[in-house]
Length: 510
Image (cartoon, rainbow, N blue to C red; front, side, top):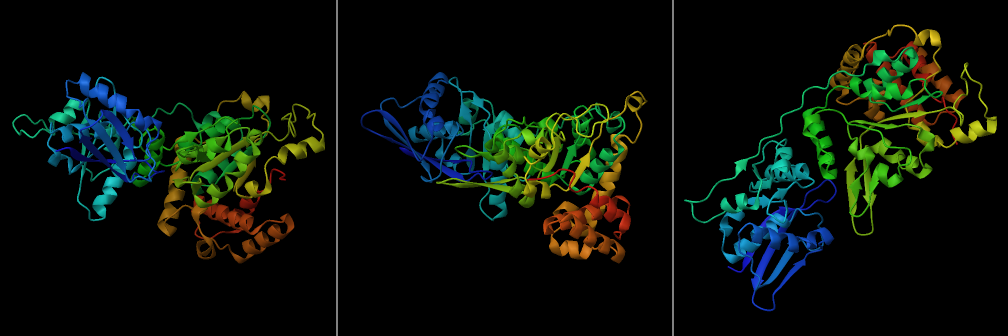
């Protein structure tokens, strides 16, 4: 036959739509034509496929007119994932492999010039798309991937996955002669890495009891947190220990996080079910934070999905980059719209920020005088807009620590002890409402986070005097609900509301 059809998948944001690779051989002036909205990486497959087939001892139709169509034609295709299906389509069109065996399989893989299969990005989204296909009642297909990619995709259950290291391995599994056919190996998931040693502990941070308490509250309810204090007071140390307070990811959360990392080529099987901790430099652009490019790629907020995004020196980030965080903090996802296409990425991250109180950093430091004028302090703190600060639940001061405290033996609770309290508080929230307190909607706040009458009156008076917005009022309610959960209290009393109020408006805003 001169026409062959091979199934594969492209990447469209976090989705992996099906692509049909059609290969046609015809007489005429020899050429190799690729159509179907293929970018430069895909068009370069012509040279890789030709060399891979020749160097693997397989025939290549040098005297034929080869036309490869990647359908649908209006879906952009990128990367070298179509090398393997194109090579198999050429062999099937020449009659060297049995085209019937291609019907129940999908293929993706980049070819080296020697025929070795190289990993591709997005193996997990492709496996998830196949599982959704089966759940939708369609005929099940197997997925053939390079060995490293297949073991990554094997984290998805309910999908037939096969791994191969070389083009010849795939060809030998598709031969028409049953006597010489060699089935592909089923993919096995990578062994999970051992639990990381507790190299850093919350107890290592001396003093700062108020900041440690704020970290515990933020971890318990998944609240965003901003630490303000002079240089060297332990803000970065506290942030680095924050991820250790959070419970491990559930299976579904781990798959969502791993799928985004796989899309960006950052997935590490040894970190399976661990929460990501991303800390970009303050020179990062808005595209680096929220995603973008052509085709759009996930940014830091999506790569830290179900994890922690730490922004040190927060006012030094470009204003546009910080303002771009406002919608994802509210919605938990980011939509990147371009003229041709629109991409949605998940972005349910926990924001940690750290900043100095003034340009010189020593405002309020008893050990060193501040050199900044009031106008300089106001301008510096005003780099953070009011709407952004309104979305940060917890704001806490991290003051300078005296030499006497620094010389003492470490004290306070360890990370393991605090993490146990956080886990209990989170479990109370999940048992009561099915989500963490930071995700409570308006109806949930009215029924599950209503304080006692005296506490409610106190909160209302504070809201009027401090000029809170409706969002700020509700965020204090969520905080009070979390503090009550830490205290294992069913009701929100005055003490819980008072503690929640003190976590608001440490920084002046524009």
